[in-house]
Image (tube, rainbow, N blue to C red):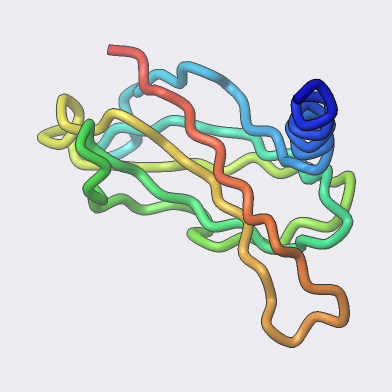
Length: 126
């Protein structure tokens, strides 16, 4: 039994070390440059050697996608690199938007295939 717990803890700890990071934890909307448009900025840091692409998404509290515009919805990000991404939504979607997420995209033609896709979400400050 203890052996199983140790193996489980090692798996959990190793997963955290191969994930990616996204900040801020609680992004806030600010006025965009166009009327009726709100903007926020997130930063993604790639700590995974096996992943070069990340997809951005905006979701409501029930995890339904919300329409948004971003500098890039899928971004190429080399190992140990970071990127800032501007995200824009219509003002009428402000109260519906609950999460901004980044998800690793595994390439099918990669020599080394990862079996773990990581997804990190930040909850929008209300």
